[in-house]
Amino acid sequence: MHTLAGQKAKPLDSPMLSLEDALTSLHEHFGFDDFREGQREVIGAILEGKDAVVVMPTGSGKSLCYQLPAMMLEGATNATSGSLRRLLAKLVTVSLLVRPVKSAASSIGPLNPGPNPLARRS
Image (cartoon, rainbow, N blue to C red; front, side, top):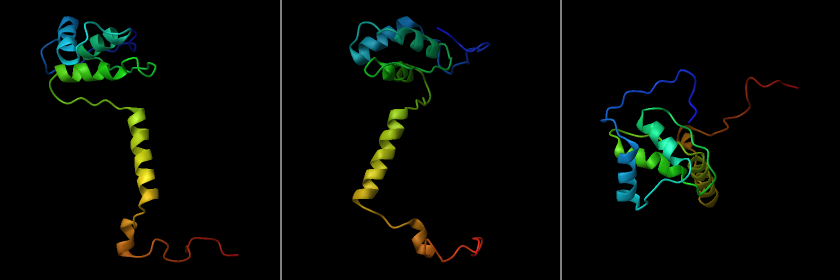
């Protein structure tokens, strides 16, 4: 497991959990007996309070690397997914194409009130 130079583990609000605890939770919640390749290192780092970035091929178990520790630790977990962001953006775009909406600004006047006073005149 590679870490940034000088990175120290952050204190956790939860009691220190081990990989054995993670394996127990993995079996209880997901029905798996062991981790896939790379998951053990990532989950171990997260349980130690370290930040982790996971780059794995589709279908290799990235989500579990964040879901399992989130279920085990107290407090909130923030996992940002680029694919989720793209999916939401696409959903909004398609929704607007199917059912256009008026601009919220339309209630205070037209969107284009006329010529731009700062524009150059020919």
